[in-house]
Image (cartoon, rainbow, N blue to C red):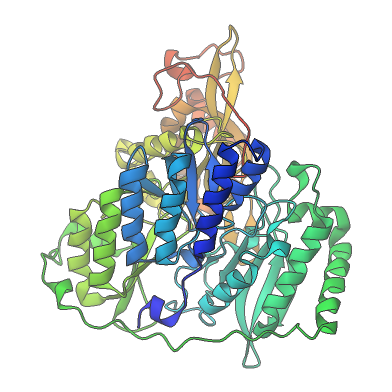
Length: 585
């Protein structure tokens, strides 16, 4: 049974498109101020770029679930309305389309509306896309499938004024697995982890987590709540934010600052007041209707009709290392590694065909900017690998150190300092051609690398074993060097999350050589059985600085190189150009 058959995955409304057309026309006639229109368009997923004549459009996919029809629509939009004919998967399971003209937005929205996808509340001071574990329903360690609960929460908040006229953005996530927090609940405003207690489904609830310039781990609000109380208690948390959030200073407006201002006891008291109102109204318990049990998709002879990889093909065997067996015997979940989260128009079409041939007609996005194909019969795997090779999507190393995550950076974002996407390409090349450091790269295989073009952490650099965020150094005579602040040892564990430590700043063009020296340090100094993240969590700053050596710029700039004043991928000398941000990610 397909995902679309099990769940109502349609979140769109023709009225949203009609409203956008009407308000856009009023704005063009001068009847609405640019600031009022800015607020309006953000709530409809239209985000300004540093290029003044184009915009970014963000399309929401709760839990990252995308149908073949939606993938084909994405293909058409990328091909017809974007400058570079591609889309971008984000760390919150959205698709973003950059360089889209404002006049084309109604047409693009209308196309996605027909497939059930919406841009409503994808940006702005709203409840953003609700994310979920991409392995929900197929993981061998999950308590139960969180998908229907996630969808119920999306529907409760979507288009509701009380949930979407907030002091700042509001992010929520659901996780069902016990072996890993794929949904990153510990860094969300509200995070739900599925649990079963005395035979009753429920959730462990975390609140007030977040990243940006002042990361904060989420606070455990409840060890367990029954599942039928999840919706009402979430409403209570959102209403606390609505009442106590800072509407004067956007830099201090997230839920984590409400927790900081009120203190844990004060926050809990404010929350309990809201819960008491819901109890008095008799609306605390709101059962979620569960769909039929998920069943395997029907056998498809087309899956075995094409060419297949040989069982002893070295590339196929390496690719199999990142294929995850499902709890359903005979099936696997396959991660498609994307280059920095990008998908071309043609690849969107090809993925739609692949989803209908090899699985149930859907894919799920993950927060490492990849796509997960679930319910793949194990006998299909060599055919699927070959099919992915044919469309350029069989890159090896998904969910390893080779799978570098990056925000769009200064290619399009007003807030970005550096071109983070170019750094991701640069580091990937160094990892692939590591030479004498190849053994270091393999030893550090389980580490992750995440990059943001500024401190705001859209690329989630705080929670990476090796993280980078863009910054700048002035070196005299009007010269500026693009640099990256190195963060080490971040990530998720049984206790929640640990944020990486600030270590040192590295000139952008030296980052590749610095990374290999860092990995060599791990190879040479690790303890027996110590993984890379644990090592980077404990290694001293002094040891790192010594290992990096002349890959760093000295304090007197005596080792300044001619190319240090150029950002990666750029031919003009570096000059910071930061504009007004519009709440990215």
